Image (cartoon, rainbow, N blue to C red; front, side):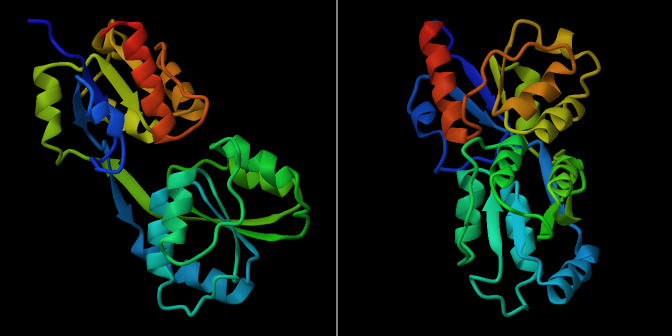
Amino acid sequence: MESIPRILITKQFSSTIFHQLLKSNVELIFLPCIKVEPLIQKKDSLIEAINQSERSIVFFTSENSVNIFFDFISELNLKKDNFFIAAVGGKTKKAVENFGFTVDLVPAEFSANGLLDSFAQMDIIGKKVLFPCSVLSDNKMKTGLEEMGAAVLQIPIYDVTPNFESTEIVKIEESKPDIFAFTSPSNFHYFLKLLSIDNPNKYFGSSTLAAIGPTTKKAIEKQNLKVRIVPKQNSLSALETEILTFLKNRNY
């Protein structure tokens, strides 16, 4: 009997994503490789920054940053027009809207570069910008916006650690997936830790690697690995479409 392709998605299972793959003749394994831990000690700093500064722009690059940000500032009586809000990607935009706030800017390219390109079309000289993020976030956005003349305050409000609690790890150890779909650089790096992979080239071998976008692709390729599936748009739905196209062309 011909085996069906096994696909690893480094994302928490949700009935709202990967509808077409779930209906296809494949086995999907959902493994969120990271565990998000809010940095409670940063809550006062965040509230102080908002109270003292009236920063005019807030931008988010992940759903996690949105959820923790609004949880931390829930005691403040903020209105929908308190900020000009930018969000990278549809999921991040939706997360903001779930808290009753309007997203004013979503870049065409769902990436940090796309967001910088969008801000470059605006006059942000002298504008105050708040960037709530992960401890793993680099200074690319901060540096880029400061070069445009903005005053940027970057506050890490959550940490990420390997998700060793997942029961899916054993399933992967017993039978390696055919396709590995990584949804962020952190998920890729922590996958290596979860599986104790010292030699990525040997481990992945002839497996097919997919990345949700160019930043994740770059992180994977730093390990001298080849990424074969990358959607043009940095989104889960676009990633699903590319995987389906790959499966069709390979006659799985």
